[in-house]
Structure formats: C-alpha cells, structure tokens
Image (tube, rainbow, N blue to C red):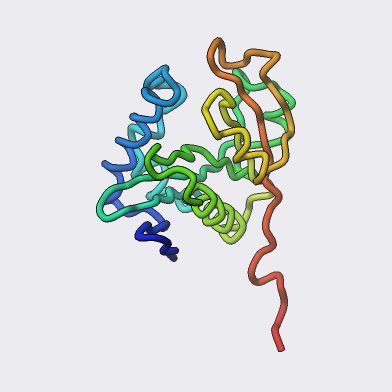
Length: 191
C-alpha cells in the first residue's frame, strides 16, 4: 500500500529504506530533541529490521522524496514502560494489546505538508487491520515545535506528565490515545 502526494510517497518501509530512516531518527535525536541517542530509549533504532520489518505485529512507515527518506512512523506492540512512565499508564496501555506509535519524525524542510498525518493514518490502519490491538497509544515531547498541536488534532490527551518530570529536564511529556479506526471488514457487505 502506498500513497502519493506532491512527489512524496508514504508507504511501508523496505530494507533499502532503513539506512535513510535511521539517519533521520538520529538527526532528530540530536537536532530536534537536543539530547542525542539514548540507548535505553532508542534501542529499536539500532536494529530497525528486527524491530519493525521482521516482526509481524510491528511496522515502519516512511515518507520518501526521490530516494531520500524524509519521514518515519513506527508501530510496535509495547505500551509505556513503568518506570519512567507512571504505573497507571502502563496498566491502561498493556503490552501486546497496545499499538504504540513512535518515531513520528519529518525532516524540517518537509514539515507542514501533511506527511505526518498520512504516515499516522497508515500506521493506525495497520494497527486496526493487523488485529489483536485494542488501543493506539503514543507520548510526545511537547517542547518540540509543532508536536503538541499536531497530536491534539489527532489524538486525545490521557495524561499530562509535565508536572511529574518523568523523563527529566528538557523533556515535557504528554501521553495520548488515538481512537481505534473501524476495521474495513467490520463495515459489512455493500449493496
């Protein structure tokens, strides 16, 4: 499945996309987040193939312009870990039944073109069609320009962790849930 728009393609990643996806993720950690690669937060980035392409319930979605990966979005079957996240969040979004969206990044020059929305829509469709997921969860650092307004248009806030400082200084975390889309086969027969 792929979606084309203004010379950008949004689709499921292939092995050929992984070096570009990894470079985008690492650039985001350093340039946008300002704290760089943190092994216990970013272990999936070391092995994108094993984390997303080889796992039947996980996926990596990319936005591609020509041969350049300019956006990423991932889905995995783990909810928020406690710690650092509050226990009530881990209980609300348990592993295996929660589709967690992560690595939703777009290169600065390609932002505000709807690519993140298209990648998230494809990720939600994957979570719905894959089966076995009851909820779609994500958390974001609201200090990143544009992150909070984007997610507030897309998802419902379930916990504002900014007062708790759960990730330490410079990381203002808010947890969100995206309503599960209806499954395509749940619509019933058409006339």
